[in-house]
Length: 192
Image (tube, rainbow, N blue to C red; front, side, top):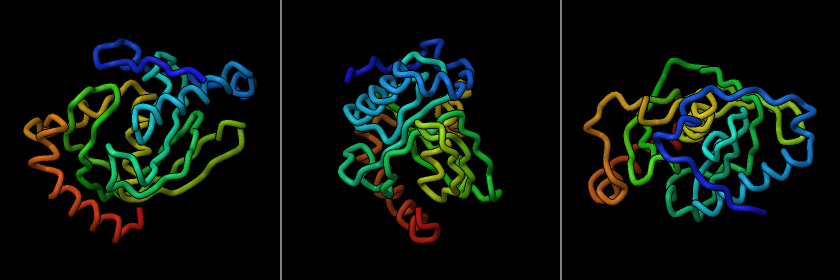
């Protein structure tokens, strides 16, 4: 496997809408190798997810995996390794929450983003099988964050209060405790 270069804010690929993959493209050996490399890159960078445009490939594909030992997101509930191809996210409630987000494509920055608390995720998996799941709470936020990349959006676009921007170090020092308290309540209420 190969570690891929992660595009940083300002790269044009992060601002374009990605194209759908066909089933034939998805089944191709080079696409399957790319998926393995995307997953390996996500794990190496301690990401909760990584979208294809973030590694300079503008196709509608992302990987999500939240492991309990992730130093960037130790408070997130686990999400098994999931590959989403051509995903569609539909809010199932108008209720939203403030999610404190960071991104592998936005080095050393976090900010508060409104996310739907309950969504439906429809996609193919890496083998073309249908996925149709509901996600709630922080898990729903993770899905929304990664799928935003496929439409050319980065979390900084969704921050409505710029005073919430913070470096990681200062976020941990000044904002983390309050967010983890809110996140824990959200997980208890919604199970994710």
